[in-house]
Amino acid sequence: MSFINLDLSNEEIIKKYFNDLCCDDYTDPLIKGGQTYADNALNSLDIQNYAKTRNNVLPIEKRGSTYISPYIRHGLISLPEVWSFVEKFEYQDKTKFRDELLWQEFSRHLYAIVGKNSRNYLNYSIKSNKNNHNYQNMNCIDSIKTELESTGYMVNQTRMWFASHFSLRDGNNWRNYEDYMFKHLVDGSRFANRLGWQWVMGSQTGKIYGFSKFQVDKRAKSLCNTCVVKYDCPIQNWPEEVSITKKTIEFDLNPEINFGPKSVKNNIDSKPEFVWLTAESLGDNDPALNYYSNLPAIFIFDKPLLKYLQLSTKRIIFLLDCLKELANKRELKIYLDDPIEFLNGKNFGSTFAPVPKYKKITKKNIPTVEFPSTRLVEPINFYPSSFSSWKKRIELKI
Image (cartoon, rainbow, N blue to C red):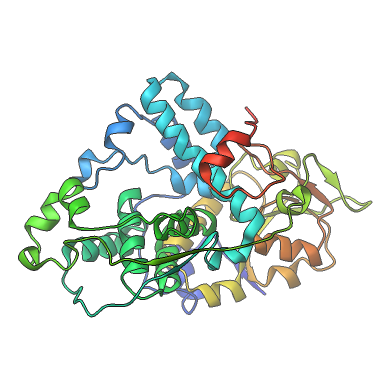
């Protein structure tokens, strides 16, 4: 067990505790972590003209991206909060933006049901043939990688470009590239990231998103104009034809297993000694944290998992900044350990997180008191085969 001293600088913490657990050298993320930054991002959120600008890539000042996704992903801002905040904007922008919020919730619902099976093709199997084209020195792809590695962020359009290029043109090796994105994205989540890849590849809908020079010319023309292969572009056309085959899949649709309790659940006839925080819910309004305001909180960096994942320092730094601000408000201890071993035999309160690792940990270490997740949409008892079919059957919680 390693107790992490938050009085150290982020650089000192990375060097002392995470030196062999990260894939890069110390790099600050573009988006700063912490509740204050999250609140400021929400209060200054402006989605005017979002419907027209959301797909812009370059120049940067014309992007419609809101840059709030890391705060949503880590629970510093909830989807219901953002949904309510944009009520004042024009119908077209508000509707398009809320569709993106629903997509986030859809990805969480799907991941809650399929879990680690999201590593495999979902509704359709996709087979593409690796070709012999030379994809070196492509300004579009190189710039995406540079921005991701230096900032920890990608706009939605370039996420689709990257996923399409490396899933449909590289011979079915998509998981390696999805892992690469996940390592560096400060808002990296298996639910949203993998669903994006599944949608682009066609394994979620049966229809592929084909990336070609056309999109770059339209959304980031300067990349083409300055590219050394401008006149011999290897992605002049869409990816070569792929084979798409419908799959038959079955999953457990028990809502409580997938989505956790609907109300506060007392599992053990005892009182919690602390609140266990997860990376899914680090905000001041975390239900368990909020209810047990007099109890200390504990956050555990999962050492075995981090050793396997080899995340970017950008992601660790974002979390450290969130935790440092929280530690200024209440008693908080941070550890680098195996959470399954750390929580063994302890009484703790927690907020349910609909992700496989939380379920694995709490199966062996049952929370004394468990709080329901904050949701935009009520849990479902059906398999959501598509976003459109899911939207028709859901019930908003606000």
